[in-house]
Image (cartoon, rainbow, N blue to C red; front, side, top):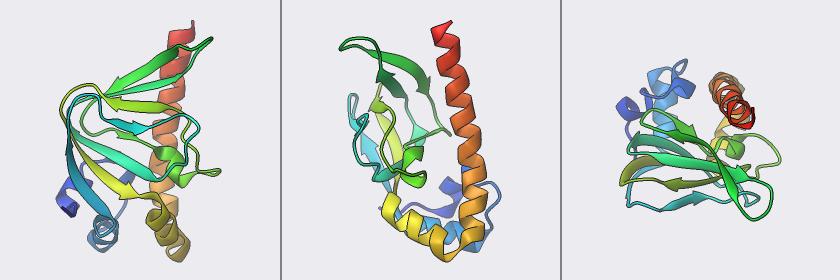
Length: 146
């Protein structure tokens, strides 16, 4: 099912977009219900989708020393994962799984990048919000390493 603009408005990365711009994002987005343990991304895999968490929880893990992955953060509603889909080289930097039954909006990475190319102002405003998310995640990871 296609996402709607009211759902998209709930996410910080889209806060600077107007209704017409949100409609363009909605057209390339789908709402999905996922069970516990659904894998959204794998470290090093091609970043094909941006995920917006509507309900539930998602665990974000990065490679640690040896075969174990380190939990960076467990996010809740209103947060995103998969920001690598809009930043080159378009490869996921973390693995993400649902920690419980979750509702997500899946945005096509390819189509989102095409939208940004055609409408640079949309890309600029969304990437400002993505920068906020990246900074927050790095801070969370640093706190775990201390």
